[in-house]
Image (cartoon, rainbow, N blue to C red; front, side):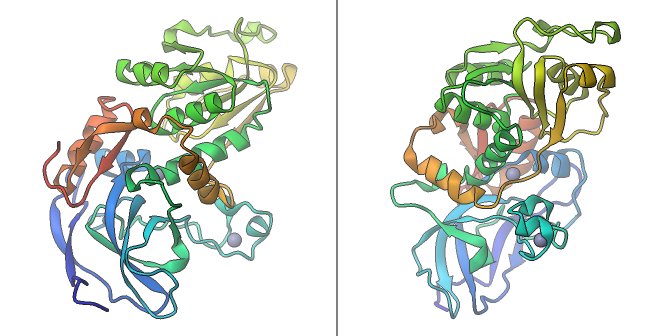
Length: 350
Ligand SMILES: [Zn+2]
Ligand SMILES: [Zn+2]
């Protein structure tokens, strides 16, 4: 270990609802097989909204799992040298259970705990097992690379939707996951419609080049007696990212025969789906949790290819560690459209 290795570092620590004061935290020693990373960017996730703004977090935790950074110190048996640009990789998986064997780590039976929920990257430095970081492809900047986790989540939702060439796709909610999914599908040449109530996010949807952006009230709703009625502009797949009950129910009603609704946004209010409509139109409602095996690698390749409009997908405003709670609150109010990045080396919001 070199003299550049700090022993304690500033971190935004969750204390209570809406409060993440910057405190000094001891860094664990860098063991064999581990690296110390200086965090460059850490995105604010929808899960951080639940944990910080809604008060579901555990006091003392440091959140932030969507990070990029640079290796400062490498322990023994590590083939990443200092200076290497890296991103946080997928959550640990057991690799042995039936789900892991089937390439579905989101359903691993033995390690459901997400990394970064207690020693996350809303801090200037993190220590990680080298198996849980991935090198950033040459030419990909650290700010864009920090999109890798939410992009892997969006790609998984698209895969769960079994989106096929020529499919028309409804994206419900243009927060970061919805916007990323929309951007990928536009890039692949799909007819994409975004439904979103917040003006800033409607604007983002338009910037992504989708076929149309609609307000929720512009979509038709059907009653129980209209089982066989299909929305005029119906969709093969609807990807629901808002977690709002009404949005889930509305998205369900936009499906054409044989359509699939993918639920990726979590919410506390439970929707009700008409079983008769599900039967008569042979609809599928499925969930999508985290990412596929190899999802981070695919996401990194896609980001490095440079075809996604990442300038629109990442909000121009950056926060320092002392702005984490404010960033989360403003995101929850829909004031930010794209992914909001925290730059731990910056103290004031720009
Ligand atoms: Zn996330
Ligand atoms: Zn497993």
